[in-house]
Length: 197
Image 1 (cartoon, rainbow, N blue to C red):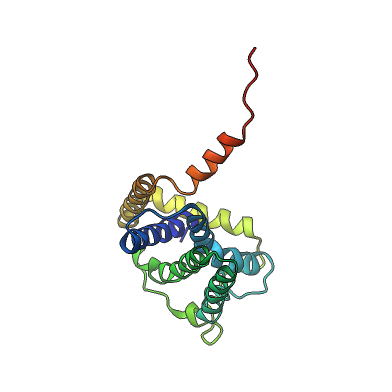
Image 2: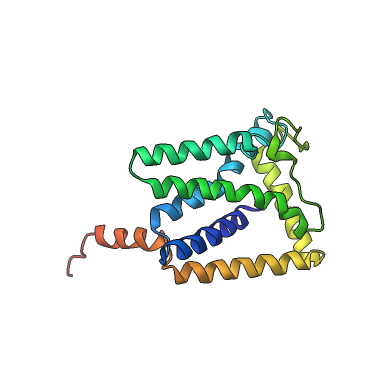
C-alpha cells in the first residue's frame, strides 16, 4: 500500500472510533500520532531492506506482530507516563491499522491475502529486492503503479481508492481538519502584526 492509503485507512478507522466512543471529532495530537503510526512499519522496514539490505523484505521486522505488539504497548506505556494516554493509544492504533491493511491489500489488485509477514521471523518474509536504494525502489514501484492506473487494468482498485480518499477527505473536513487547524491557528497567532505603511 502507498503511504496515503495507509493514512486514509488509519484516519478513517480512528475518527469513526472516536466519534462512536466520545461523540466528537479526534483531537490534533492524537491525529498526528495516528498519522505517524500508520507510516511507522514502512519507515522502519523499507529503508532497512531496500537501502541497507539488513532485512529480507520491506514487510518484515516492523510488520511482524512480534515487534508491533511490544512497540504499540511501549508507546501506550510511555505516553501514559507522560500523561498523554490518547496520543500513545492513537499511535498504537495507527501502527496496528497498518498491518491488516497490508494483509488484505492484495485482494484489491487481484491477489490473495498475505498473512506471512505478521509472524516474521517464524515465517520467512517473501523476498524483495534488497540493497537497491530506497529512492530507486520507490521510483520503480511508483512507475509500476502509474502504469497500472493508466492501463485501467485495476479499475476496481482505482474505484475503491478514489472512494476511500474522497470519504476520508470529507470526514477530515467534517472533523475540522485536525491537526491542520491547530497548527494554522498557532501560526496566525504567533505572526507579528504588520506595521502600518
